[in-house]
Image (cartoon, rainbow, N blue to C red; front, side, top):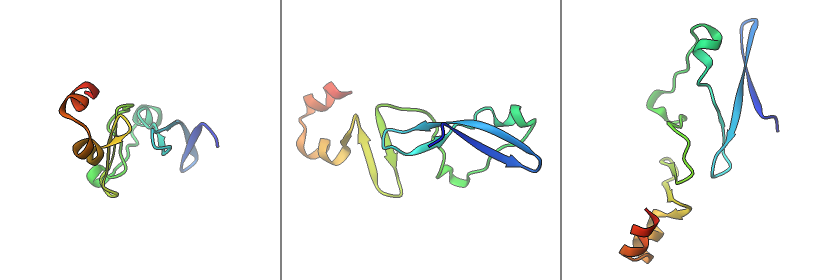
Length: 90
């Protein structure tokens, strides 16, 4: 796998770094798109395919119903961990 993504718009191409997430998903870092392209932006209605930040602490996939905190599912923490164990993890 390459460590970059290439966006082709007309005769122009733009390179962006790839980031690997905690669940091995691949993200394209397009934070320089507007300045590199002099105005091109992305649109993602409802932000369903947009990560707002990088996090090594939490993982969320609303469509699949996954919410993890420090690698533990929220259900597991709620059902099996004590208050002190959860407080310590925070």
